[in-house]
Image 1 (cartoon, one colour):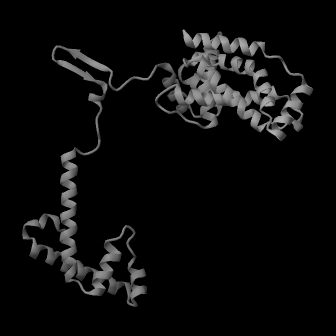
Image 2 (cartoon, rainbow, N blue to C red; image 1 turned 90 degrees about the horizontal axis):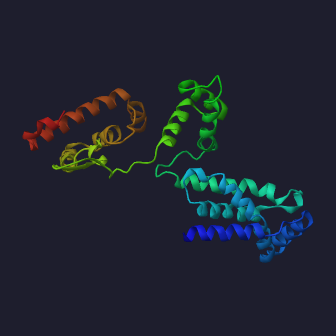
Image 3 (spheres, helix red, strand yellow; image 1 turned 30 degrees about the vertical axis):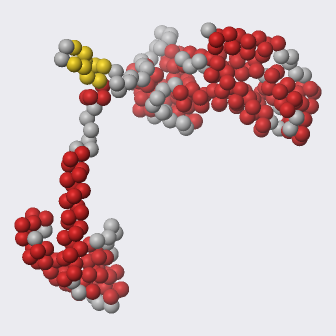
Length: 288
């Protein structure tokens, strides 16, 4: 009730604000731009609040509060006032319309659904024009449906048919809470989230894997002590780095042939395997 009263007061004030003639508008815009005259800004914005309310009304079917749409439109109006260049000889209402619409549309995209959609210009055009185009294509003697309709809309808005189908499904129904009950009887209840399948390992499996990894690192560190300095360098650069060095690159760095590097690597790996099995004979499964 309070919000309706506030909106009515806002609308009455907007309708009561006087229109600005071109010369007066230009003078106020110059005062605001050059002198940051707050009174000039107030008169410009007050005179154009009816434009904000009219624009907000065009988006009321998205289910958001009209007061919020008007407030967001006012933000766009202030942004337009901050960027307006009176010397270009364009009426302020013409310039401000784009900023008001953009501000309202951004607000709708942020708040219409808990699932964020695309923010590109093509995705915005799809979101705000899909219903209108679908209604137009469904009318008349040659009405379209299904795949043909998606193809026509995709061509008109320059997006893929998949994007059209996805947006259509999003606009067809409201968001569903994961806590919404699906089953509720004497034995208990179950929510939507109870039926979601997780692809991640179970907590006990993650802990077990982490412990095993730490053990393997410790065993390997101890076994590396049996290698010579050159063997250790080759193993580190060939096997213990994400991007292992090539035989040719290592041979060039050590001043030996790549075949010699391969031989040293093979011998070092065998020494490591022997050392690991000698100290941990019960862990042969971990040594390949």
